[in-house]
Amino acid sequence: MKIITAWIDDPTLRGVVEPPVLYVEVDHFPDMTYDWIHTDDDWQHAKYGPFVAFEREHTLDYSAGDYNVRFAGEFPPVVDITLVVGSATWTEMFALPITRARQLVRKHCNAWRLYLSDKNAQAGEMLWVPQAINPTCRHWYENSHKSKGVCCGRPDTTFVRHKGIDLPLCPEHLTQHNNKNAEARRTTSK
Image (cartoon, rainbow, N blue to C red; front, side, top):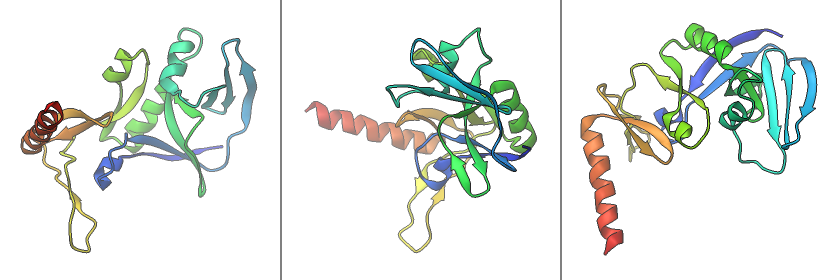
């Protein structure tokens, strides 16, 4: 198995408020390096070449951040990825050790870096997330014509937490965002 390329998909560029995701494309599905190991606390993990596969039984609410906390000191921390093999993708279960993921990001998508999420750390997770080095405003203009719309794209941004995502906004759109939230608070408090 050979890693062909890697890229960051940022849905906010399409007007969708979802976190950016690291995609890793390989030439064929990786062979299992070691079989599934089960722990007493419902975790199981395996290794597929450079990739780590993990699951938590009896729940679907887990991430690499939870895995990193549970196995801190036992295994290297990992980053959630989407694994791509031809036209097939695996959006859950696979992760890549942080050191290898950072190498791929520097090599294939050098406008991005992987940073520890402050918000997730406050919630007790060690989750690394992609973040643009020089982010631009992600305010989305809906276009009433046949075009699909466009992102503002101005530099000099500040991050705001919107729907659980750190969204970069320029000063103008930050003011609009804050005014909209203030109006919503006034309306609901009456």
